[in-house]
Image (tube, rainbow, N blue to C red; front, side):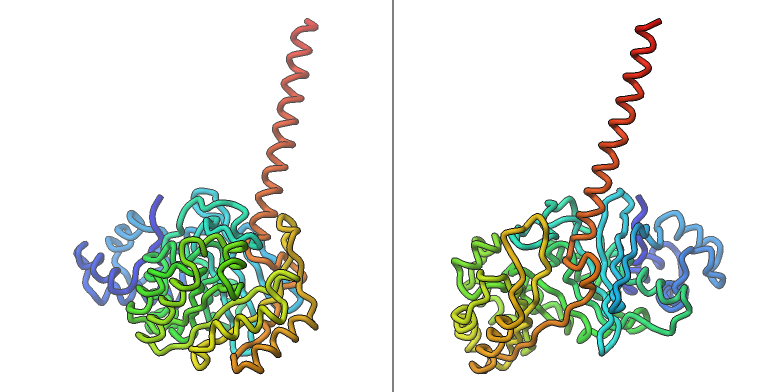
Length: 376
């Protein structure tokens, strides 16, 4: 399979082009065709020499994804199911926010982190996405608006889809540099957030990468026993190791950290949990921001249910009274497959059922033929 040209940063593309006998300004033209004009074939790049176009076609594809399903919610949220070149499926979500259009991208096919409440981890990781496959999600969402002649552009990106971004660290960092390039998509670093379930060593590495991208940590519990029971990663990186890494990040960057906290009814949402959480964050009050997230129920995880809003507000009040900055996340796409990974999981079940029915038909057809043959 040819790799997607979206996976190369502008500097990498310049180096590759010059190594292959092309002048630097040709790469700038190529970059403009890709990210400003957003063409879908190399043949459309009319000011590039034919030999350069042939070279590009020989080595790269542009868009490696095929759109399989699109779900549009009443609130403007759009959920996409994309197929990769090897027929694996991923999800991408477009959310309309007051501040602009935000896209949530996927970084892995499946997930090995093993959070017990999450639809993304229902299927184990099959592989990492390349940086080109991650960037192509943004480009196809933008194409959705381009084709409809809508004067709108993707302005914000959250790396919070299927998979653990820091388990695919190099590809994710390359992707961030591609979309942040001011001559390309030009999505500002302050408008990009990467979420991690808590890979402590990678948080430290992220602190020194030079990108001014926001960090979010999926916390979901205020103590080790509870966190370990719902998030397997806490066995490897308990809260002591996690917060040591977060402290290093804050020291190096002086940037705020968002803590994501999914509200699970009668599991992690009682007032005493809120007090524990406030105590956990007390030394970094000025740079800690808690995002309380209503739970989207997942059929396969029926041991969990949504916290009633009165209890969410009670939890919120405890945090605020203890000086913790927090917000209750606005929900998006509640009338479609809202939870991350649900659409993919549903589609794979459908494919599996279709295959079973097809196999049953084939088996029945063979049986008829065999019966006819025996009767002869």
